[in-house]
Image (cartoon, rainbow over all chains, first blue to last red; front, top):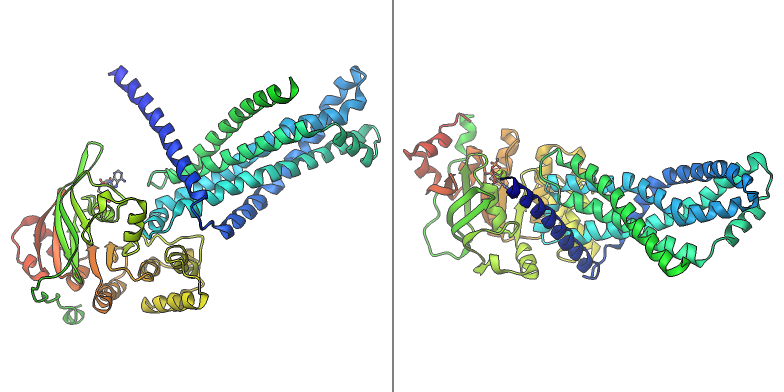
Length: 259
Length: 263
Ligand SMILES: Nc1ncnc2c1ncn2[C@@H]1O[C@H](COP(=O)(O)OP(=O)(O)OP(=O)(O)O)[C@@H](O)[C@H]1O
Ligand SMILES: [Mg+2]
């Protein structure tokens, strides 16, 4: 009996993976199926930007500020105070900016996509679209996933800039460094191998947020409580994905660039 | 009440003649896990005919019509729509078929992020791929007028009452001129007056466009107004079939329980 239960657990897990693969194939085929929903895509981009810009901005600002305050004492003991801008910009651009932005978007966007599609499922709107001969994957899923894959990198870049500005203010609590000198130092310490992997990573984070949100919403059950379940599990799963992707991406970039 | 009943006599049986069959179902079976929902569903829907399906809640009435549009795959049996086997269709063929079938959902299923106008334009631009905005507007206004909701055109679905939502849902399926209509409880939850209006609308559509319909309902008033033929469903199959007048006299207990309801 127990063995059977364990087996069915495994089977469920495998079936879950199968569902993800099927959903991904449907998404992928529909990108190129013709009749791309431009206006819905733009609307989604706007919604994502509008909904998370504020939060990403504030969080990144505080992160930049706090990091400088935390790093300062250690770098002073090392006599490397002048390295502060460089340290901050590398930490922020390579790692903290992308991850913080993606996690915020997992909480804000994946959940709202999950809830929105989940409630469309419960109220049979998705079925109605399908039965009318329209293509709900193209209209609802493709637009949202592409919008998150496009907007989250953008948000991360803006977040990085705001974070660096936060760091500038923190530095000026104690030292006085001119704005242009600070930013020159920051930018000089960044190169292509910092920026490109970071942007590539955020595209994947954005994809994860959109994909998981859509998947959870699209596959939610038809009970009323399932909308909440879809939103909640979208956040949890998307966050997990983000960290897994991050771990893999860091391995790959260090192999390729930092040897 | 008496008075109103007079002009909504049960429909007279249409003269028997050989008619084209648009839906042919034979021995349909469908289970979910261990639960057998449909056991042996057999019926023919003829062109221009209204059939009403009665049955207790949870008997699989909705599942039956979901099989007809390919939302669910039956586990066994024959199911042909317009003479073609629906279970063997690919996505494109299914899409072509669905354009000819209207499906009214229990709750109306309006897209709640869009206005009524956008809801109605959706099938025109996404399914029929119409481009001419003048033509689109004309169709939208025409069909809203037909369901009597022209002044709700710029409202959001959340601002509409249950009956209005159902009528907009009906308008949205009618706008592409379907040949078959599947109504899932078109009058449930509506007041008697609106219910009757919808029932009569169903009849008008049937006459005007020669639409063939399957109407699922618990509402005997609706059944009496719209049915050319009634099927009574129990335990996964149809246990009785006939016109309203015929079934009214049935001595089957299950059938009687519908007709004796003091509704
Ligand atoms: N997609 C599905 N997955 C699993 N079970 C389902 C599914 N759709 C329907 N069922 C089950 O099939 C049975 C019949 O459902 P159906 O919705 O057809 O009932 P119904 O006759 O339309 O009832 P009502 O009058 O309440 O609408 C129910 O027990 C339901 O739980
Ligand atoms: Mg039902």
